[in-house]
Length: 612
Image (cartoon, rainbow, N blue to C red):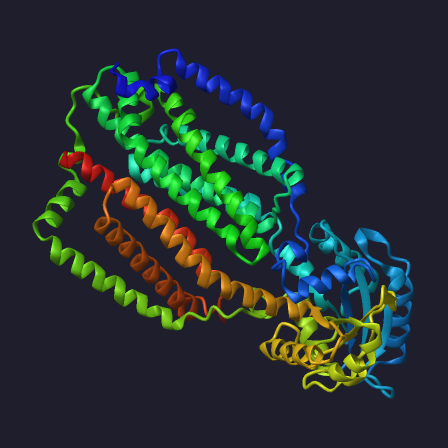
C-alpha cells in the first residue's frame, strides 16, 4: 500500500481489522451497562428546562427554602344537578383516605379540601393533593396520580370524578411519552433498514451499519451518563431521545458514503484491504468535515438561554463525534472482515463495470450538466413556492389540550373544573417579596386584572417567612396555559416590580411558560445566525473558497424554508394541529441545516476530486 493509504491500513489491514473489532468489543462490554443507566441520570425537573436567569427559575429556587418542590393534583367532583348528600359523604371519605396516602411522593397529609363552588347547593368540589417534584418527579408522577385515582375511584352514578391540575396533566404527558426511547430506537432502526435496502438492495449488507451504529449509540450514551453523573452535564428526556435519533441519522449518513466508495474500489482492486484503504482515504475527509460541521453546530446550542436547549448541545455533539469514530473504525473493519459476499446479491466483482456510469443517477447528472441554469432556476423556484407555507406557521406555543391528539382525563377535568371554579385553579401564581413590603405587594397582585382577589394567601404547606422573605399564591381567572394567563403574569410582574424595595418576583407554571417562550424567541434570533456562521467558516476552510460556500449555505437555507413551509401546511390542513411550540423552528433549523450540509459537502468534495 502507498503512504497515502496509511490511515486506512491502521483500521482495515489484514491484522489491524481484528484488533479494531476486538477493541470495540472490549469497549462495548464496558459501556453497555453504563448506557443502560442513562435514564437514571436524567434530570427532568422544571429547573433543567427553564432558562437559568428567568424570574420563574429564581422563584423556584427561593421556594425550596419555604417548602419542598411540589405540584398539586386536583381531584374534581361535579354533578350538574348539584352534589347529593351521598356525593358529599363520598368526597369526605375520599379525603380521609387521601390524607393517609404516601406512595410515589404523594404528600397525602397536606391534602386540602374539599373546596366547593358555592356555599349552598354546591355543584362541584375540588381536592388538592400535593406531589413532590424533585429530579425523579417526572418518573413517579404517573404512578403517584394512579395511586390517587385508586383512592377516589372513577365517575359513577352521574357524579363526574377527574384528576387534573399540574399533577394530572404531567401524569398524562408522562404516560404519552412512556416507552418513547424504545419507540424511537425501533423507528430509527426501521428507517435505516429501509434506506439501506432501497439503496443497496442487499439484505446482508444492512447488518454491518446497524451493528456499528448500535455500538456507537451505546458508547455515546455511556459517555453522556458519565458526564451527567460526574461532570455536571444536564441531561433530560428530550436530549436523550434526540441523541438516539442523531446517532442513527449521522451514522447512517457516513455509512452510505463509505459503502459507495468501497464498492467502487472493490471493482478496481482485487485486494479488499487495499480497496477499503483507498475508500477511507478518499471519502474520509468529507466525512470528517461533515461531522465537524454538525459537532460545532451542536455546540453552538450551549449559547442558548433555555437550559434544555443548552444541555442538548454537548449531548448531541458527543453523539455525532462517537458516530464518526465508529463509522471510521468499527464499520470499515467489519466490512473488510465479512468480505465481498456481504453485498449479496449484487456483489461488486473485481474488474466488473461500475453501474454508476450508466444508471439513473448518471443520466440525471448528464441532463443537469447540459442545462444547469434551467435546472437550478426551476428547483429554486419550486423550493421558494414551498417556502410560502411559512405564512401558516404558528410557532407561538400550544395549550395542554392541543398538545394531546386525544382527550385524556386531565384535560376533561380541566374543562369540567373551569365550569364551576376559576379556570386557573390548581396552578397559581407564586409571589416572593420582602416581608416589610409584603402587604403592599399583595394589594398590587389582588388589584391586577386577571387575578381572583379572594384567592390571595399563603402557599399551603409552606413557611410563612424565611430570612425576611414572604411567599404567597394567587389564582388566575383564565386557564394557566392560555395566552390570557400569560398576559396576566406580565401585568402582575409590572405591578409588583413597581413596589419600592420589595424585590418581588412572580413565578408559577404560567410564569414558567412565559419565560420559556421569551427565552426560546431569544434563542431563535441568536442561535440560527451563529449556526450559519459556523457552517460557512467550515465550508470556507474545506473548499478554500468564498463564493462556493455562500452558494451552498443558500441552498441549505432555501431547502430548510421549503421543508418548514411544507410542514406548516401539513400541520394545518392535513393533521389539523392548533399550532407549534416556540422552539420548533430552532430545532428544525439546527438539524436540517447542520445535517443537510452533509450532502453538500459530500457532493462538493467529490466534484473537486472528479474535476482534478
